[in-house]
Image 1 (cartoon, rainbow, N blue to C red):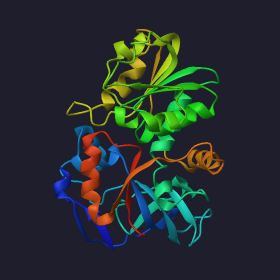
Image 2: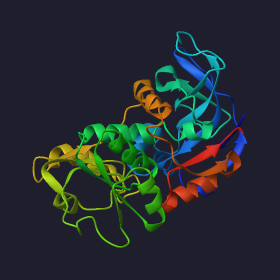
Image 3: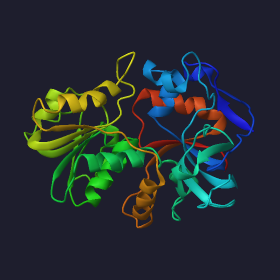
Length: 325
């Protein structure tokens, strides 16, 4: 099969379209014919091997799995022993084990769900990681109806879902984004939009009941200045942040230790990969309460360009690699 792969850590220049073996599935696993794959900071982390801590799981000197990609939408091609929820021909979405920038991928049954009936494959591939992370962030931030919620990075992959999920819970989202995304963020349901090129989040003096920070480039002291004393600051991502060993994840890992010392509670958001979260999102997607925002779509052979665009750090919504059109 065709796949985008690299045998060493580094930049997108190392990526190449080449022939690799179709992955073999075992008990409890599903072989999926990939139609579309999501591009997210986690893919960049696995491509570069940075921060260095990720190499404990992915391979110290070189990646154990040379094929990139985690989020997938596609059609079940075969099922392993013990798989009861799917059969060949089912349209599914979720996260995979063997790389999704490929024509086929191997996934655990528990990490897949039936694809929402009203989505295309490209739209569905935009859900599994970013929307699941946004859902966890909204829950960790304890968002309730009537609250004011600040979403930083509101025009990106996670942030665009967070704005919609905050609104879906009856809260009042304020989105923070760049000038090119103001109209989008407002259309997603933000009651106010802060263009960070014009003013900072503390310029209005408003205090929020919760903050969902997907950008990771503002100091905690600034975040604490704009939150109520009993509020929650949910820290998401930050994989591109500085720090050779932990990168932006150091702040998330330190959140439980730092939280008691200062205004509001800190929550480091870590999303699980389980079909229960996808099932919950499917209900919202099919009801039209949230919708994926697909920014740019690339062909499989153009995956290196997709990674370069991601690395710029200003993507609108989700980037998708379309494998089978």
